[in-house]
Amino acid sequence: MSYLEEDARVYAQYHFLLFEKDWDERPWWNRLWLGIDLAWRSQSFSAVVLYRLAGWCRRRRLPFLPTYLDKLLMGTQNVFIGGHVEIGPGLYIAHGNVVIDGVVRIGARCVVNPWVTIGLRGRPRTPDRFVYGPTLGDDVYIGTGAMILGDIRVGDGAVIAANAVVIEDVPPYHVAVGAPARALPRRDLTPEELAALAGGEPPGR
Image (cartoon, rainbow, N blue to C red; front, side, top):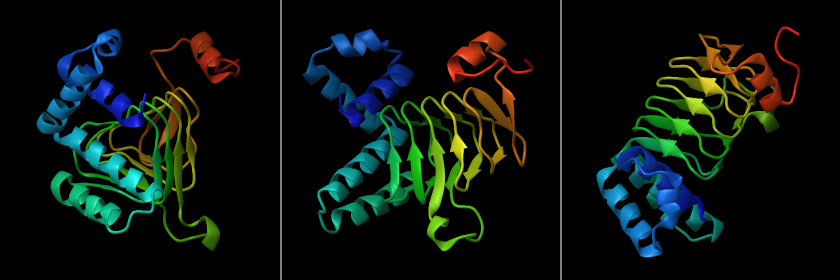
């Protein structure tokens, strides 16, 4: 399954309340039609389509088109995603007003809410590291207004709370809250579940 098809499947689950098996059991032409319908109905899915198309053009070194698509993405969707950003399949952008820039890596099935900034932090300590932004794992949820800044890592299954300012690493399956943010174990997981998911000892043991 291509990245864009996985993106469409995630959006279909949100907008049409489809289960994963419902998507997989549909013929290809029906999935294509749903994707077109989503691009028409959902402004945020249109943003994801434009980002994927710009990336496709860059990988094939096509002139002009990536820049044009970036400007179209920014002008029509109010979303800026830099040319050095790599995002895994299943991306869900809830609404616009999102900035992602620098050398940023975002894993699979991540959710990005409005007014989120993911990118660089302050002046360079070393010039060669200045362009490096965060690296996010899979299944990361980023709340409205959050900022994730600098050459840091956010682990799988982490939750970034609304308006949090994250400037240090966040362990897997933790919640980052506050400004500057501090990481706390997720309350929906028992210590044993947290340890099994993160591959470490339960907190407090």
